[in-house]
Image 1 (tube, rainbow, N blue to C red):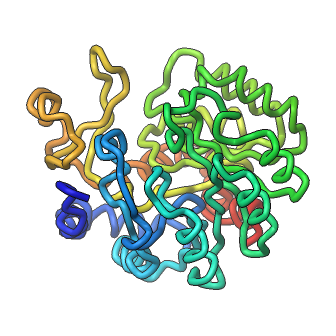
Image 2 (image 1 turned 90 degrees about the horizontal axis):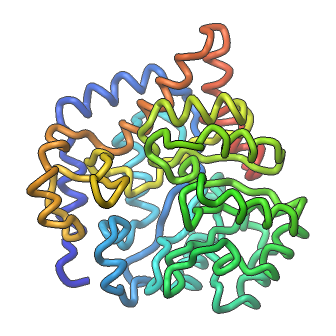
Length: 342
């Protein structure tokens, strides 16, 4: 993992700023005492066998490994005194020994937590056989795990695998290969082929801003009662509010995207490249020319974690006051508890 100073990145993240300490206090009062995080990553350093240049240039390479012990430490650091249960799956890039990483989580995860199997599109037999494991609560596959990067759902979630997930009533965690407004046809075809499949669309559909067609996309997909959303790493209160309006509070679940939520960054709209993030720190994957031109946007940025929680708070507090506590409980606890069988 040449040029990836993962431990330095973690040390930097754990040096909380004054603003972050203040956010921690504010959210300690606002969040429920018990929380379920339904989108987190964990595997060991020994599971990382290789890394392509494409992966190295992506933000997910910031923390190629993150142990269960580190996860517990981070949760206690950011949310002291809270009871947090977690649905975890390994890091998603090719070069992780996914079988060993899956086994690590299945064997070592705390009994009160849950595991999402990381499925392998090149090994359908393994993926199908592991879905029946009693500790597997969901299936995660990832569009950029394949090379070249997948453009459709079925390039990673093979139909044979989805058929078994549907039969076992195991939900899939779907990180769309394209932003949700460009994936409608793909999602509808999958739901036509597998009408009983339960689906969680990750990251609220992978847009960090309200984009043209987003409300139409949410409204159309909300007609399918099998679809829910997770909020992992989405910093936009407007996006969360729109999702709430279309899907309702019973079908949206909190996810942190741990450990990527430790990156201090801001989302911005690059004039040529579209939606991007820029950081206050020169991580190995940050384009140097973008850092020079746009790095000032991230001055005094806080962890992406606090930004995503802030978006949730904005959306929930836009509701009538009498509804807010019940919605908060659903999104941070009961929806994921019931959906994933905690």
